Image (cartoon, rainbow, N blue to C red; front, side, top):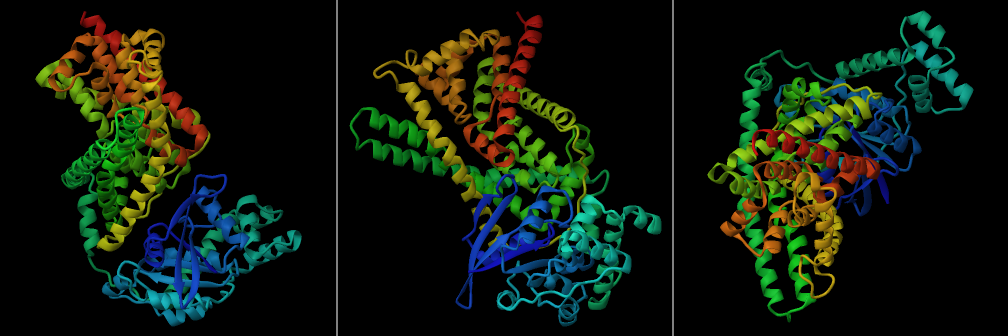
Length: 629
């Protein structure tokens, strides 16, 4: 099997090209020992089966970022047959910085000059034959979005060539040769050692040039990239581009924020206008299937398990799939248009005060819809520390599943003014999430520096076909993770509620747990055993808190609201709302969080969120009790 290593900068269209080459054959896994994601897919070229390995997007192979280190280690190890370097032809000079590093590996290589159709529309072009001659490798002009020249690119992968060595200035070459002679290193390894570990010739080199070797190598790379680009590319005419016109609105200091809020509003309108009816339809189908299947079964534990555990737990996840898919589709459209980068930039100044950057904002916004895709979306954040902080903060953002519970509790406490409680809960959640982000950044990760660097890609017209494929792939990945966590926990909670046999909910193991919690840990919050038991159900899914209260009390609708209202004082009601909106995320979110940050930090986040919820609810109870007896 031919193994192809796909390498390119972020926003170079690498993921789109990967999807175009492999279709839906991709599988996802993590690199051993790290949270960096690996994608592999299969394709066939002239009866030759190929495996395409999508390496993390990076600007350099000589950096210390986990994505860069993983890509460099894989490429240096050489467990592949050919490198496919994806280059953004509309930003050729910048993209060539990585290409020149790849030539130092001296491995068979092919270059895909992506977005070539956009380049030609702008009035410029690249002499691919001359480009190929200079680098010594096949160079193919392609457009992954529309599928332009993909058959030619596939043929080139069967006939790669080892690139020419792109020599730098004499001083750098002497330093490389010295390092190779002393340590028997390859050219690439020698450069990596010089940049990251220094050299015995540092003092001499610095005295001659006045800069560190690593800085000098970067400047030499840029000079070489500029030299190659000027030889093969016609200059763009100086004119007012549409992209610049749009940026004068979207990046304007005053107009940028209102424009962003309009975009966010439209995104959520589209998500819920399309996804919500489909979700309700999916829920109806699941309910119909549950009724039809269980009607054929005799009463007993088997029927109870299928109805409440399988259809009630797993079926609940399935019913949310249309909403999740719609969210992924709309967000993928925004990503492919180039607007996401602008949204990150415009919000950076505000979030930087809490230890986050603009890249975290979209993930936080997605958390209001569903925490699971929001946590998964943090993988687009380049800085590994910020990625971890954002993922650990997102579970405090109240997702849409918490809204029905908040509405019922608001109606029980305030009647027609239930919206007051909902607004109160959302404000509390956002404030505590920002405070937690500040604490994590300045305490847990205080020794790790961070900076916000962002490239603004040009605005592009997205491909609906490829966007649909990407949304489906992400949705399928979400389902796989959710089932692995939700199914076993659903079975556990069903057993707790139905054991010992023939016992009521109050006398079941779950009831015993609820009474224990209400008399010990939750006693300062003045929560009874019914509410404490319902909170245990919320570990699987937040909306299960409401349904479990209905099962425990044997009531629904207005009767349930009235019963809940009688169980709380004003202070204990607000305290419970605060605890509910802040306490640990659902099982599916825990699974997604574990994938993104690892088991250790998932446990840390779990403990921290319980502590935040407990302290927050105690503060609310104490403060409200001072004014409302």
